[in-house]
Length: 106
Image 1 (cartoon, rainbow, N blue to C red):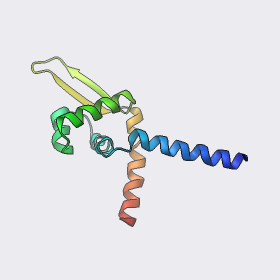
Image 2 (image 1 turned 60 degrees about the vertical axis):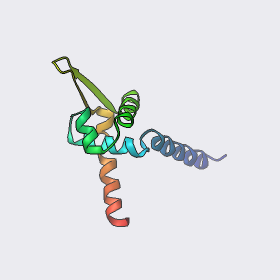
Image 3 (image 1 turned 90 degrees about the vertical axis):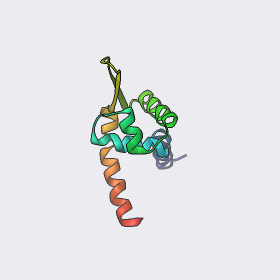
């Protein structure tokens, strides 16, 4: 296999792996929504339209992958806040480019 072919396969694999991590509908919705800043669970539920079960699963997944940070305040009632990590914030230019592309082609 030539170097060019191997490089192409590697770049294709990286793109596929990236989409596997962030590519589900709900992951994209939550990541995009959190670009506006930190939100509580119920705020995310309202703004995304996700069910509690789906949102909980997606937030857990995004947290495990390092895209989302979770902060809990012990005041009564206990409040949990979600925000983008540095890794999550690094997706902002990607969302901007996809938006630009969608404006032109969709």
